[in-house]
Length: 245
Image (cartoon, rainbow, N blue to C red; front, side, top):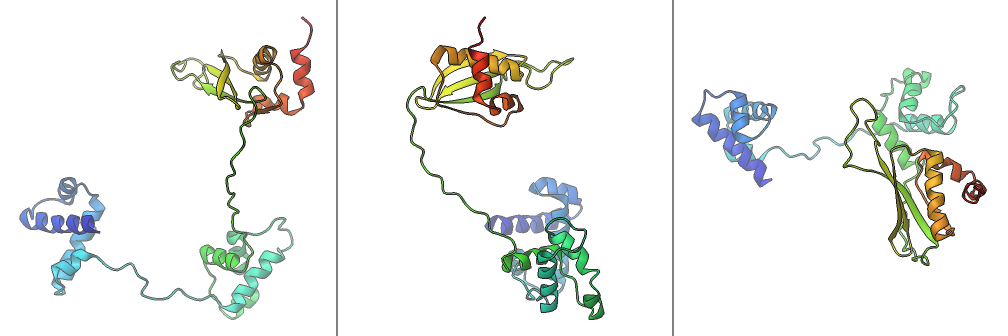
């Protein structure tokens, strides 16, 4: 609040000292936007003319509501909840605020009584108040016990940032490294580096690590599409690893 007060005071004294300065010159000197300078020069001029003390003007206007928010008529609330609970024919989904507002504007009863149609934000508040929108469930993080060494791995692709993009070829993921980290010890077991990671080459690289350290009990991975083969089942992976040469 003090910084706002000081900026307004500086604007006033600069405008008095340099009356020929443009809005842009004042904005550059104060480090403010041109729109802010224009708004406050107008407010200073108008309110000083009304006889308001300078220090009161510099305090700014209160942001407290002057008028209470308009209440939603019970008939409108009932219509909102009815549309939410029993969507009109042809609407194959639970209607949100935008869809509900659309149908409210076409409600014959509301048109007959000339009921004002609330905004989407107000409709959302009505749905929230009447438990039609569930509050998000905040999960409380629970500590996870560190697994035994070499039993659980975490695998992830990382871009090699030191390799620049190819102007005539790949712009992203030019070279990637497949990191295999043991969750029990946080040791980097392997870092496979390739410019052509696919589902096949990624599975081949992972099989090399498994042949070196043995098969873990669990592997944690993200939703990279290249791991779709592993999602199909460990049998596929085992077949690739122990396939005779």
